[in-house]
Length: 308
Image (cartoon, rainbow, N blue to C red; front, side, top):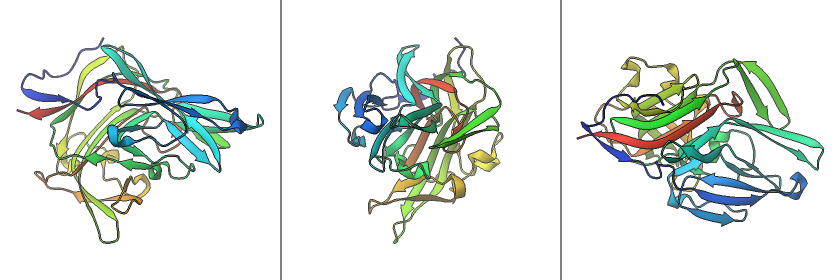
């Protein structure tokens, strides 16, 4: 088991809600008869509960959503599972996997969609009704006003490292060259809504961590510092840490119940209060439906570090 980073005795550490990964909601969803009519199990990081039936999940009980999908496209119900509980170093943990969800319609036409395992703060807008713009099916972020110094976690990674990516959407799939590191992201924002319902934000805090190769067992107490102000001034800044706009736009539900883009307008000065946080842990870092098949990331013991 790999060693940790810095000692934590000089800071105050808080475990995140459900951050010990000991509690999971189990959902049983029956797929359409044309796909075989099997009942599949989906997991939500949340209260211990078993939910029967094809219905949207009530995210008021947990800040966590995931890439586990309950979809109903053209009247056909389909599921995809890429996040599950697993055995960890201190009980249970989460296993996030990049998988190819495939099925045959009426036993003849095969549908394949690549899914990157992801846990994030927010909500999945269920049921999903199509594969176009997957981020638009998610309500990203939760209300958050604290200013942590770092995010802490334990993790283990297994990456095939084959130098190729797979893109899979419905009836088409292809291989392209490239790599796909796992990624942990924490974004702190100050958000506001304009008169037309548009959501705008300034970036208050930025934390990124990429895992580009397999680990030799578990890495404990990995510390990911939060940068405040303009992250472009920080040593180690990379272009993927920049403002989320354009092709990588994220979405949120406004006061009218509409899911609209979050328009990050700029970098907030240090000391700016934040209103929301986006936390995402993923087995890959590519765009939707593209990734390294077989990537697997285990995570446990999520905590925030604060100054005393």
